[in-house]
Image 1 (tube, rainbow, N blue to C red):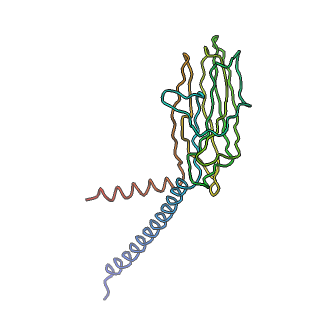
Image 2 (cartoon, rainbow, N blue to C red):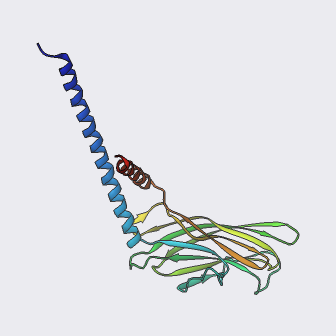
Image 3 (spheres, rainbow, N blue to C red):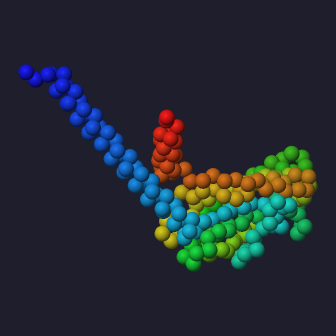
Length: 219
């Protein structure tokens, strides 16, 4: 007479093996997707255009030197607030393509910039502007002058949004650069900012790192 307990154990063993095999298959698929994504990320770093955006005074600050490879300076959209002269402070925006590969063009650049200017009486002037550039060549920079105001006033400005694409890539872009600046008592301060891409690929990669880390911690 057959043992029902043995049959039950055999049946559930088969189910367990199938479940483990299925989980292993899922893990393999995820690993393949993450590896492919990481390869694409490396390609973007090595070949695709990569834009750094900085905002601050044309001459830079003590801890920031403006790029030397500026091929174009645009002043047509410079907004003047109050009674200004040529010597009064200006806030500019640099668009620098850090890629050096020949096909690493940055295309269709769109940026939204805002500033808050405060006069001696405490009145606030809000300034907003949109920059659109057809392209930035690899290793080159473009400077766009944004707003000018009396040197005795105060100001703060920031990059609100940046979008662009490359020859073979179109998607979310990371923030990189001095994307905020402040002016008071006759001095500028440029604030660095870095916000890497947080896509589903990054989330999967972090998940795998946690899984592998927990396995290594087990005795």
